[in-house]
Image 1 (tube, rainbow, N blue to C red):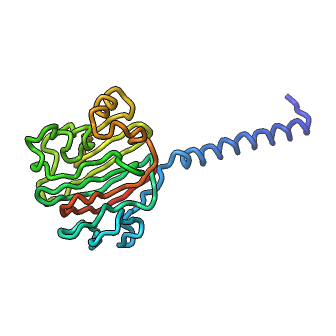
Image 2: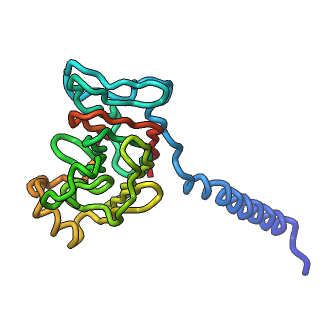
Length: 227
């Protein structure tokens, strides 16, 4: 079939526009869905991305990539300067004998969800002790597995995933808490916890805290990426 020259030119321009649009889509779609980069919260071998929550006589120590709350003077908790809402946080921790600490997240003023860092032997036999075990969500959800923690003084790997209403805790490669804020399961446990009057609990953008609970504790390889 014969097409006038003007018609051919229009068809050519239309084809170029179509294939150009398709090529742009192929280039931009992967970028749109690419994961955001990891942020090393101990980058540079300093604590520039953190601040202590109170003016205390003691200080957290960062040495050889390990941040620790040493024995002795009260240090106050260590909190990020930046705030986060949807994120994946990975870190390693080890605790002293009978020690207690925790990683708080989505933390503004007051309480917030806590990844429990604990020598479990300290809690055995106590009332509702499962709700306080290491890697559980303190006073809400105990971890779903036994024998998941390393012995006192050895490093444990941990991960927290917060995405919308979904909160997950991982311990040494195993998912041990998986709950949705506002679900029937959440409401049941929340109403019997010490947080029942905190309407924004687990729902808002906030900082990451490393808790000072009076015992030596160590953290390293603390990295976060927004989701």
